[in-house]
Image 1 (cartoon, rainbow, N blue to C red):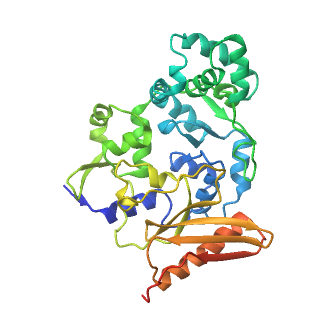
Image 2 (image 1 turned 120 degrees about the vertical axis):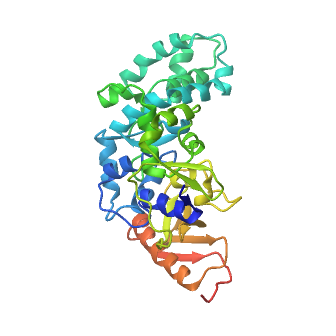
Image 3 (image 1 turned 90 degrees about the vertical axis):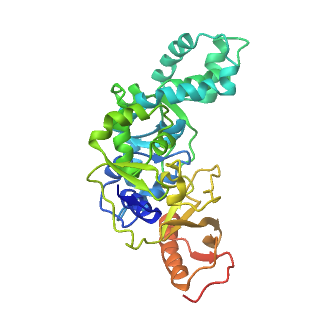
Length: 369
């Protein structure tokens, strides 16, 4: 059995995540190829697409959202993702058990013990079909009908268990709109597909493989995947990692030469390349976790250097312009410092436009290499 070492896995993942070189795909095709993008921070996918696509402009993604060809919605792992409309229709039914399990273990569910959830959801569905509503609006409307029951817990039950999407202006570049939820079927004008777990796992391997069964579960939130994988096995190629763990992959998926160079890439604070494996060692060193700060996105994140998480970045605006501050974890070779500064100035031009730009480094003792 062929063994794939850490660097081979790193390069395979970077290639599929479009981080070895920028591509000329449309934003819609890129989101599809990536099997969705983390979207908790609404502006984060814009930075993620900028790092992956030639000539990407925020207007392209904003247009997909306003035209309802892409949506921000709760899917993998019970987190908000940016996915195409077609992918939402396919993915949401598969991960419904994940959302039910997460809600059942939440404090909101404990507040609703003894309540018939089917009755609640049947009562709530017309509200989100009628018009988009915030959780606070749902809490008021549902709480008025059920005195003595915590309205916010009722609202969380709906946003976990009913297929909903977050509607614009939330998710539009530079917007600060509240998270407002609408019925997915009403918003998209279509029903959802039948659950296809095999199809979802194949999509995962195309975007993140080669991977273990545990990796598939970490990305999707699904459990009990081994039986599904066994059914898929005749369609897959099998490898081993350097620790002897079985890796599965699509037979014709790209697996670049491990010695290929990887350029500097700036990623948002939420990016699936850092979060979509049970074993994150293909991009992260032990004990090093990406920042997951709350916010609108587009102002802080992570840096890949030679394909690995090597620094954090933050953009601050002032009356004098915009400053990008880079904090590497270790001393930098001079060529790496120059590459970081060059790519950082491109990021500033994307995020801050015509404002005066400056790139600064948290002091480290640079190496002469």
